[in-house]
Length: 164
Image (cartoon, rainbow, N blue to C red):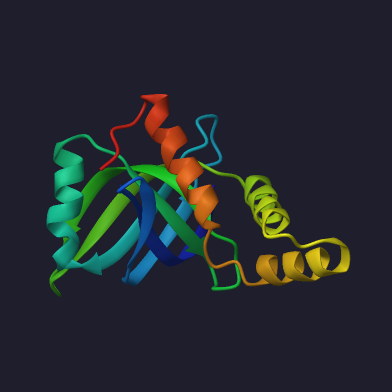
């Protein structure tokens, strides 16, 4: 089992045929790689109590939420995960602690491939392509827009998850 600091949490929501990222400001959080055969992760985020109704609705409807998380520091690459709400705890300071059970929806190699495809589609070639690829990978704070849409549609099409 490995534990990491949760740096950021974004909800990935499908609207009008596109995927929109909604950053959820976190007060504190951690993410645990259980390193088990089910490849489970747990994400605990302390967020504003304003998110209680959203997460409670997901939990009551046994829904799933596609999220993008960054661990440890801003410089790390994001990880897209499919989650379900395990527990919600109201805290004394009008915040809530949300515990999400998660599985990776996209691996780092997939991100690299998507960034490269996007650059090739934009018409970059040779030295220009290498320079732009390195720049994008160094500054990757979120998945490319095309990757988010692909992730969302594949998770939705699998029929395994009830996306909120």
